[in-house]
Amino acid sequence: MDKLLFGDNQFFGVNHMSEEKARQQQMRFQRTDAIVDVLKDAYAEGVTTFMCTTHDRIGEVANYFGENREQYPDFTFFPGMPYAHKYANAVTTDGMMGALKRFLPNSGLVDAAMRGTSSLVGKDIEGIVTLLIDAEMKMFEGLPTPVIWLQNVVTDLLLGLGFNEAFSIFADHVRSKYNAEPGFITMNLPMLAGVLDAQGVTSPLICANINKIGFRMSGGMDAYRKALESHDFRPVAMSVYASGAIPADEAIQWVCEQPNIEAIVFGASSRRNIASTKQLVDKYWQK
Image 1 (cartoon, rainbow, N blue to C red):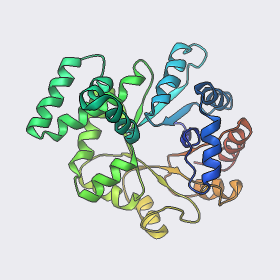
Image 2: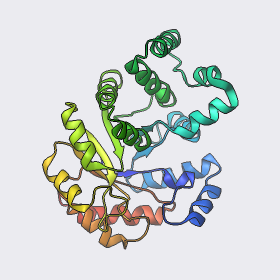
Image 3: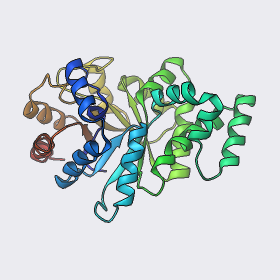
């Protein structure tokens, strides 16, 4: 895995400190080619892994890099699912069956439909989970996806409900069908690390806010430090800048000093900022 991953929050108007900045970014990236241009800049700076949601616009991005594979042979996708708003919007516009048809994989359509129907009738959670994973992966057919993430909106919901078996179902399906590593995004790393360990999910990737000031780190700094030192998982740090609250040099130096960090995910809208983060990681990453 690359030590620096490029995220997509900035493309869809997500900024945890400034609604105005989020609005400006959303306006700027209304066109898919504007997103692609930034990804080209990242690639040119040596940041070749795109950790993304399964937003419909990402499907257009995936199509571009699939059609231009020879120009970007190392460009890699780390999909994160589900993108909850996509499902809600699809049901609103197409109805329940129309939404299901829209998201079913091209291959194995009948099998997937039957699997979904029998799952709903028999309350077979494993069938429902695997069906949704396959539906989300549809847009990445033919592209490298060595890591597949479960988004925090679902991870933390399952964690709160105590439905821990779902994590092993997700991990097993991702590994067996896609030959990919399962990843889990969460707002509560200490709790999730313990649950995954108890479920027998070996050496999982866990992505969480990890930053010097404890910004959006549920459970507190001490609990995160203890988890990083004691549990068998591969942590990926996000929100390392705490949405701009920490100076870049200070933020990257601190996170690179933390134990066992596998990678850092960051977002940027300009080649200058991409290059700056890449240079800082190269400077401080001594592992």
